[in-house]
Image (cartoon, rainbow, N blue to C red; front, side, top):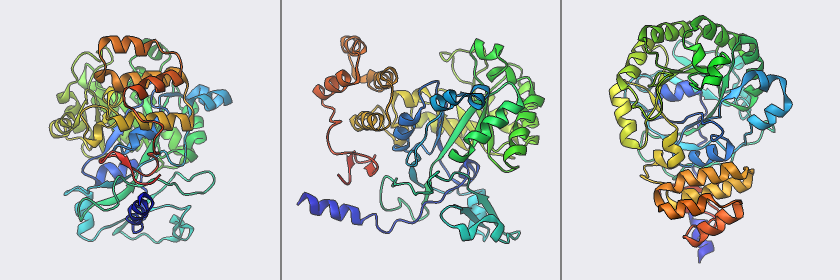
Length: 423
């Protein structure tokens, strides 16, 4: 009987359209809600990116990669960047009721091309008229294969819903243009864009001339973005992630100068480089930065996002196109799917994807500690933190009701209902 039920469930997916593949800028322009995973130091590696993509996180970002080391060292490339064909999610997304989506309903077509899947539709074979915009797709799996991901449900939630593949951005830090262009060229075949870190507040980064050291070097930021475009093409997506400056005139100058270099979008963290994460984020300062952009490119807000209420307030009060979570997703990877704390199936999925990809114990242990902290008493936290192997962690959590050894929940996973559709 179970086998028949599985066949019936599988049949629901037969009529799915091919997911649209588009640049992040287009996603931000055209869809009502775009959720982004922040570049987390050491933590936003492949297994965690795959995990959050199961729970309505549309765009994921690598940890900050040092461009100079990445471009010079094979060992650094192996250590700093891994990806898989299936790490990007597939989502039902709702078009905006204004802007690009409204233009589409008035007869302006938008086309996203996957040149690997449809070589006959390559950009050089299309005569694009004034009423037709072509967005080039950049990521092609090295083996030319297709991914196996499915959306959380087989039918669209509304009649306007569109099926869209998620995106992956590599975040780089560099003190000069040449190293950034070299690193971008190496990583470009595997990602959907590059983000230049202009916001890391750590003192070592500042003294190395990266991160927040760039906030008051707008010409250097412009030159670095242009160097990547010179290497990869004017329309290859390069974004910047900044912190607001204590003197907002500097924020205005940085943004306006970056726009001259054709940045694809701007992410704004609402704290200055001197403010700790314990201090509240400034939504008025984010709004100021959004106004500096003047609608030329989309914007994303970052800081103090712990649940969907925070995300909605951030959009309403600042006017950004998308929201980015960092510590909120560490504590609850299913945040954007509407869960108020980490559900058991998210922890179970994390264990499975970590075993599939391979994740060093220190990170495996840290992620589980973040996810389950709200569910543990002080004594339990102390005991769990003393465990020294993945096997011990899994055994302990199994005794508390987590079933990581049960039916596999990827890639066909329904995050809203909490069970796998197929074995």
